[in-house]
Length: 237
Image 1 (cartoon, rainbow, N blue to C red):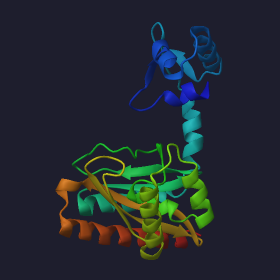
Image 2 (image 1 turned 90 degrees about the vertical axis):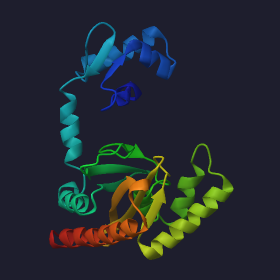
Image 3 (image 1 turned 180 degrees about the vertical axis):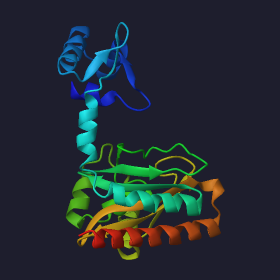
Image 4 (image 1 turned 45 degrees about the horizontal axis):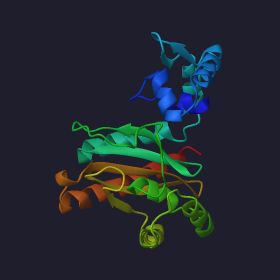
């Protein structure tokens, strides 16, 4: 039932019974039983015959989740400045269990399509911002995370990733290209509060649009704004 509920998204706000059957491989009676339970809890409502949407009741869950999004409000001005100064999209990510979630975003005038969107949960081992978060794991926890990946990483890929993460711990800066979305370049820097890694500030841009000079300039800006956010969080203690 929860898996059906989680299928609803910004890009898929409406689901049909046929789509649910296809995605989950369940029987028609089972599908209607789960949908009936969701309707009884006022989480979905029927929109036409055999078509369902989320109900307004779901907004209470969204509001409750929003109150737990650490430092989203503090990060927004940082992202707005980055988007304005670089002309590219800026993100703030944090770790959520063994995943990365985008908390907030500031898009440039040249909007791009990216997988990291507010609320979307993504793997930790791909993308500049996500790898900043993974680099904060202990060696044992990192190995545990990587060992659970399905399908497993190719040994050569895993070895290269481990080396990148070890370097990232020292440099506090990450770069990726085409790791999450084809044709996109990204860089990221960590954000600490109370001595703990709490998130990552990242800028994402089409690789063709940023030459070496632009990438270097964006990198400087990302690191500076990550430090600025740390200073803001320190003052807010």
